[in-house]
Length: 148
Image (cartoon, rainbow, N blue to C red; front, top):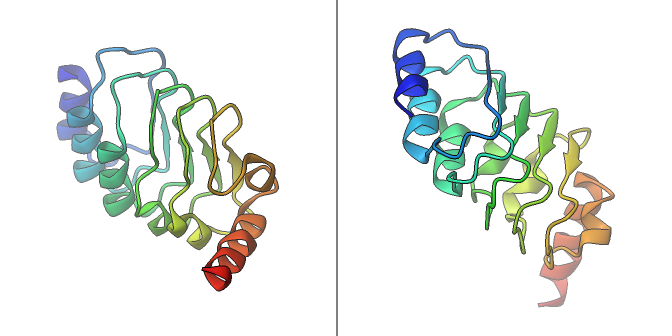
Protein backbone atom coordinates (compact mmCIF):
# COMPACT_ATOMS: atom_id res chain seq x y z
CA UNK A 1 0.00 0.00 0.00
CA UNK A 2 2.75 2.46 0.93
CA UNK A 3 4.55 1.98 -2.39
CA UNK A 4 1.41 2.44 -4.51
CA UNK A 5 0.36 5.45 -2.45
CA UNK A 6 3.83 6.98 -2.97
CA UNK A 7 3.60 6.36 -6.71
CA UNK A 8 0.20 8.08 -6.76
CA UNK A 9 1.55 11.07 -4.85
CA UNK A 10 4.60 11.48 -7.07
CA UNK A 11 3.30 10.46 -10.50
CA UNK A 12 0.12 12.44 -11.18
CA UNK A 13 0.41 11.72 -14.92
CA UNK A 14 0.46 7.95 -14.36
CA UNK A 15 -1.28 6.30 -17.33
CA UNK A 16 -1.12 2.61 -16.43
CA UNK A 17 -1.00 0.71 -13.18
CA UNK A 18 -0.69 -3.06 -13.25
CA UNK A 19 -0.38 -4.95 -9.99
CA UNK A 20 -1.05 -8.67 -9.78
CA UNK A 21 -1.51 -11.00 -6.82
CA UNK A 22 -0.84 -8.35 -4.22
CA UNK A 23 -2.75 -9.46 -1.14
CA UNK A 24 -1.64 -6.36 0.77
CA UNK A 25 -3.06 -3.87 -1.72
CA UNK A 26 -6.09 -2.15 -0.17
CA UNK A 27 -8.78 0.36 -1.03
CA UNK A 28 -6.65 3.15 0.50
CA UNK A 29 -3.93 2.79 -2.15
CA UNK A 30 -6.32 2.46 -5.10
CA UNK A 31 -8.34 5.43 -3.85
CA UNK A 32 -5.11 7.46 -3.65
CA UNK A 33 -4.30 6.51 -7.25
CA UNK A 34 -7.83 7.44 -8.34
CA UNK A 35 -7.73 10.81 -6.60
CA UNK A 36 -4.21 11.82 -7.67
CA UNK A 37 -3.85 10.23 -11.12
CA UNK A 38 -6.74 11.56 -13.17
CA UNK A 39 -4.98 10.61 -16.43
CA UNK A 40 -5.07 6.91 -15.61
CA UNK A 41 -6.07 4.94 -18.72
CA UNK A 42 -5.50 1.40 -17.45
CA UNK A 43 -5.93 -0.12 -14.02
CA UNK A 44 -5.18 -3.81 -13.76
CA UNK A 45 -5.29 -5.37 -10.29
CA UNK A 46 -6.23 -9.04 -10.80
CA UNK A 47 -5.96 -11.38 -7.83
CA UNK A 48 -5.69 -8.50 -5.32
CA UNK A 49 -8.11 -9.83 -2.73
CA UNK A 50 -8.36 -6.89 -0.32
CA UNK A 51 -10.09 -4.52 -2.73
CA UNK A 52 -13.78 -3.65 -2.54
CA UNK A 53 -16.22 -1.65 -4.61
CA UNK A 54 -15.31 1.39 -2.46
CA UNK A 55 -11.99 1.90 -4.25
CA UNK A 56 -13.62 1.18 -7.61
CA UNK A 57 -16.23 3.86 -6.85
CA UNK A 58 -13.34 6.31 -6.36
CA UNK A 59 -11.92 5.18 -9.70
CA UNK A 60 -15.27 5.76 -11.42
CA UNK A 61 -15.57 9.22 -9.82
CA UNK A 62 -12.06 10.39 -10.66
CA UNK A 63 -10.56 8.47 -13.59
CA UNK A 64 -12.63 9.68 -16.53
CA UNK A 65 -9.93 8.63 -19.02
CA UNK A 66 -9.95 4.99 -17.91
CA UNK A 67 -10.12 2.62 -20.88
CA UNK A 68 -9.22 -0.71 -19.25
CA UNK A 69 -10.26 -1.99 -15.84
CA UNK A 70 -9.22 -5.48 -14.78
CA UNK A 71 -10.43 -6.67 -11.39
CA UNK A 72 -10.55 -10.39 -12.08
CA UNK A 73 -10.37 -12.77 -9.14
CA UNK A 74 -10.36 -10.06 -6.47
CA UNK A 75 -13.20 -11.53 -4.40
CA UNK A 76 -15.43 -8.54 -5.16
CA UNK A 77 -19.03 -8.85 -3.99
CA UNK A 78 -20.18 -5.88 -6.07
CA UNK A 79 -19.18 -3.44 -8.75
CA UNK A 80 -19.70 0.18 -7.73
CA UNK A 81 -23.11 1.70 -8.44
CA UNK A 82 -21.38 4.51 -10.37
CA UNK A 83 -19.42 2.30 -12.78
CA UNK A 84 -21.38 3.81 -15.66
CA UNK A 85 -19.44 7.06 -15.22
CA UNK A 86 -16.48 5.43 -16.98
CA UNK A 87 -17.65 6.56 -20.41
CA UNK A 88 -14.30 5.80 -22.12
CA UNK A 89 -14.07 2.27 -20.79
CA UNK A 90 -13.34 -0.19 -23.60
CA UNK A 91 -12.57 -3.28 -21.53
CA UNK A 92 -14.04 -4.38 -18.20
CA UNK A 93 -12.67 -7.65 -16.85
CA UNK A 94 -14.48 -8.66 -13.67
CA UNK A 95 -14.60 -12.43 -13.95
CA UNK A 96 -14.03 -14.88 -11.11
CA UNK A 97 -15.43 -12.71 -8.33
CA UNK A 98 -18.53 -13.04 -6.16
CA UNK A 99 -20.80 -10.73 -8.17
CA UNK A 100 -24.48 -11.59 -7.82
CA UNK A 101 -25.86 -8.43 -9.37
CA UNK A 102 -24.63 -5.83 -11.83
CA UNK A 103 -25.41 -2.18 -11.08
CA UNK A 104 -27.93 -0.59 -13.43
CA UNK A 105 -25.43 2.11 -14.40
CA UNK A 106 -23.45 -0.54 -16.27
CA UNK A 107 -25.72 0.13 -19.24
CA UNK A 108 -24.23 3.63 -19.46
CA UNK A 109 -20.93 2.12 -20.61
CA UNK A 110 -20.23 2.18 -24.33
CA UNK A 111 -22.07 -0.63 -26.10
CA UNK A 112 -18.78 -1.85 -27.61
CA UNK A 113 -17.09 -2.25 -24.22
CA UNK A 114 -15.52 -5.73 -24.00
CA UNK A 115 -17.07 -7.20 -20.94
CA UNK A 116 -16.20 -10.31 -18.90
CA UNK A 117 -18.13 -11.38 -15.81
CA UNK A 118 -17.71 -15.14 -16.26
CA UNK A 119 -17.30 -17.32 -13.17
CA UNK A 120 -19.49 -15.13 -10.98
CA UNK A 121 -22.71 -16.27 -9.27
CA UNK A 122 -24.52 -13.59 -11.27
CA UNK A 123 -28.30 -13.51 -10.87
CA UNK A 124 -29.28 -10.01 -12.05
CA UNK A 125 -29.05 -10.05 -14.96
CA UNK A 126 -28.59 -13.78 -15.47
CA UNK A 127 -25.09 -14.74 -16.59
CA UNK A 128 -26.36 -15.91 -20.00
CA UNK A 129 -27.56 -12.37 -20.70
CA UNK A 130 -24.47 -10.68 -19.26
CA UNK A 131 -22.25 -12.76 -21.52
CA UNK A 132 -23.93 -11.13 -24.53
CA UNK A 133 -22.63 -7.70 -23.53
CA UNK A 134 -23.87 -4.24 -22.63
CA UNK A 135 -26.71 -4.05 -25.21
CA UNK A 136 -28.23 -7.31 -23.90
CA UNK A 137 -27.89 -6.14 -20.31
CA UNK A 138 -29.61 -2.87 -21.23
CA UNK A 139 -32.52 -4.76 -22.83
CA UNK A 140 -32.80 -6.97 -19.74
CA UNK A 141 -33.04 -3.99 -17.39
CA UNK A 142 -35.52 -2.20 -19.68
CA UNK A 143 -37.73 -5.30 -19.80
CA UNK A 144 -37.38 -5.86 -16.07
CA UNK A 145 -38.33 -2.25 -15.33
CA UNK A 146 -41.45 -2.63 -17.48
CA UNK A 147 -42.60 -5.76 -15.67
CA UNK A 148 -42.24 -4.53 -12.09
